Image (cartoon, rainbow over all chains, first blue to last red; front, side, top):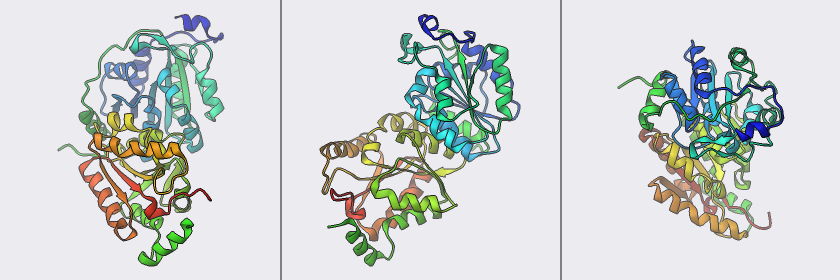
Length: 204
Length: 185
């Protein structure tokens, strides 16, 4: 909360992670892959309704975008979304440059920015009061990146990214609410079901 | 002795340089995606992989980023391997323990070994000592390649084992194989 007061003026509404995740999932009609970063980000992805093309991270903080990049390179005809928290992205800012260099046409990224490590007790991130993650992404070469002004604008940006010819990062400011559900922590099943969902495997 | 001299003597033994063995063995096992954080010893290998259209290869900012990329790619049906040096491996304990191993991902890593057999940087020699204890503490498969005559067998069998058992493997490239990096370079 204090972060939002202290952040440089930005014409962006404070939204809710679960609501935005549900809006995204409702738009996915073509078996798009979705990679959910650790913690609340994938808890809300799980709560929005499990899909066979969802992958949930249970660790490796910061790797949602790199994992999504790998999926996007492996399956260039499939749209891949990656959902990441601001604290997680701060762990792996370098991946924005890698993605900007490779320019996969089928990768869309969303950063859920509440300025806090909600899950560990809502401590502010080092970026909270001073850094603009979308400006960082643009500086890294992801020049189509943008903050969503409100829910309607978020949906417009998602629609735009679905047909975009280069990767973009969509920034959303979110509140300090915890995730809505809890992902079942079964990494082998998560991975195997994801591979089934991507058509890489057949069920035993 | 210059590393190039060792390289020449090894080539006289096996006919191919170690880096040619890596490139050809990756190809034979259909490993097409090769993200890396560079190392002096890996220079020729990286250059040759870039020059070969079979491969998709690029540098990453951190080694764990490369691990994430090949993990996602394998789940999507594209095989990969990561190239790095010893100090880069030292940054990977978390991603090995929370992604590669529990999700059963056949992560294939080539680690150019710094820190031993003529190291000139004390920090490198210290970080090198953490590598095998980390691998052993996670019960990970790893081999240290020292001889060119065994090298193709080790690389080929290790790749196949990683893929079929869905378990990560680290292939450590000893200065005995590569010549290493020496102070006068």
